[in-house]
Length: 441
Ligand SMILES: *Cc1c(COP(=O)(O)O)cnc(C)c1O
Ligand SMILES: [Zn+2]
Image (cartoon, rainbow, N blue to C red):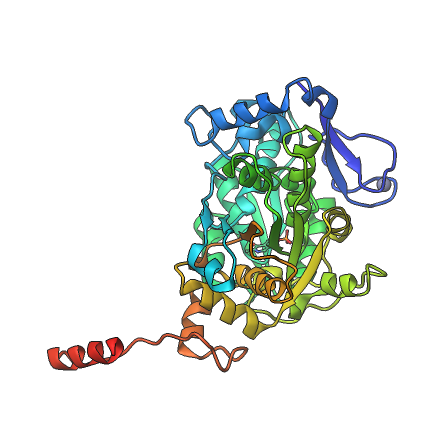
């Protein structure tokens, strides 16, 4: 079995065990990342890895049918199977957006539907790894009393579900009034302690960090790089779904910027182990209301400056001080990356436009699709490029956003371009028939 451990992203010497309670480098305070023993993993050939992953994919042998645990040797080799807390995450649909792509002049456009998942977002991919590791730490005698996170909604839903499945206490700290009803009710239903704080996400993050330091709770935010290890399977899985071909572009919405780092980590590992020979280009899409990465990109990566995030319909990425910004910039530099942003009207209209072709997009996916349309419009994405848009959450979590868009009652989007309103009619055949005829004329 290969060894994996935490190491400082700024290169301080010293390795830390994955079941150590540690989130930051003790020397410089920077983030940690999980490093795998690539030489040990190389003792299996690229072809053999691909065959192993294909043999396990969506099959029933516990826990390898999970999109995450099917890649266990690359993710968390030291977890004993009895400690795996899995709800069959991953294995999500890679959908050919044929009609929408054709409208944009693209023949090879795909949407990776990460929101078609147990709690409705990609956060399940990371949480299965984190909660499994905590379960093993507790089994091995570590004094952990609870798992906790600050959240813009989806992290808390995933943490609450996996903690409930494992029988662990979960504490979630949310910015009051800034998450959707569905996102609020998920941790309530799963029995988590829900602490709704009068403040924004960045304030909740500061509180939970202190709780982790002082109260013996384990921090489940993405500064904890165990989550990144699960989330990185998204790139491995999409390449696997293309029969191990690499797309030309991947577009991903970014807030705290853990997920883009994860995306890059998966591609990097596949290349190191010979499963792929090239890397895709990556685009991070941000809401214009919370776009510190976009600003840094525009300055030629001269300097990164946190911002105070303004309200956005894309509530899960309303983050002004992203914890994983260094990792994200490194990833973008390696993947010939670009950053785009989208206004509220852009993200809502583009989401609705794509919905007209059969999708059902959350606002964050709307941000990514708006970035796609801009890159196509500028000719950076070519008509024959194979493009994957990472859809991060299920649109059904954001019905309020969608209902109000179609009603025309979103203050941010006073003139929705694709609003579709119900027609209210009397119980009268002729009235209904006349309306049908009008529509078909
Ligand atoms: C968490 C989340 C994001 C942002 O991911 P980061 O890792 O914070 O960049 C985007 N979309 C949705 C739906 C999310 O829940
Ligand atoms: Zn360090």
